[in-house]
Length: 365
Image (cartoon, rainbow, N blue to C red; front, top):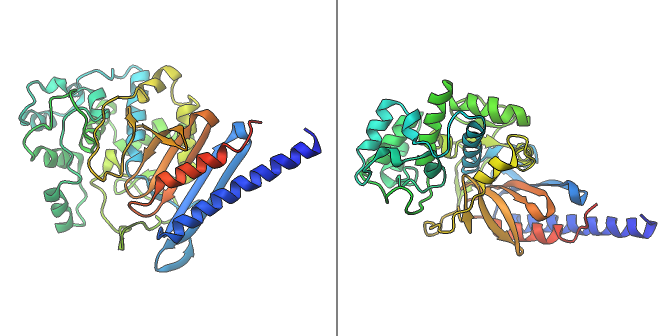
């Protein structure tokens, strides 16, 4: 490359980083307490890792790129990847009835649901694709009242399934519609534990985290912290840092870091965990998906634990969490884009638009 060409490349990279830094500053200026953004784009010869804002609003300590944050529904992508890993290694088939792998008491709970004519209609695939018809316990007002009443209670998976069943009936016949929620992922988590005969946290660690060297990620409330303190995150003015989220579990209970999320996406799309044939199971998009009004999780298409959205006219594949976390892969640029906006309702689409617009200035190396 000529000296002129090298200079042009350096100028473009500098402009790209300035654009990203400005985007992070704008998030802080509009009320987000802290933001972390990490980008890895080897084919573009570009990396970016920066944090802006504070660890907590009432703390002068700056947020760092290495700080941990709650993954929330990014956990669903990990659970789905684990389920697909088990299928790839012939432990089960994604179209198997989940009842083949559930304890008797959980099966009895499911059988009580009105509208479920055959409990074997609940397959692993339908559960992971949110087409099972099971009601979501997490945002149920009665369940949240129970959580507030006993804030120190460590919720067990069977209790969560029981809480969902108190609605009394399916939302729809399995396989006929779509409704996003945590319950189906909890059911899959219980099945994984029974299949492997060890706890979900250990299943994540031995089959996903350890192979991908995700050393900082852990299942909060169900195993010990593995690093720095958890950064604070907010719903309006409410600090959610001390909130007991043992009730999230397989649907949203992980704590992670930007670096670990990068490793996770690279492991998925780099086919470290399993081959492309099994990756396609995760991204076999459903055409019809219906989202709750004002839902923080909204995708144009949804597969198993992963969704597809558009950013600056480009398809990005990944998952977001209700508390602000995000993890996306941009296929056209072979780039991972991860981090957190530690505020419920922060404008992640605007940030993603800017990120893709900035990356599209770069030329492949």
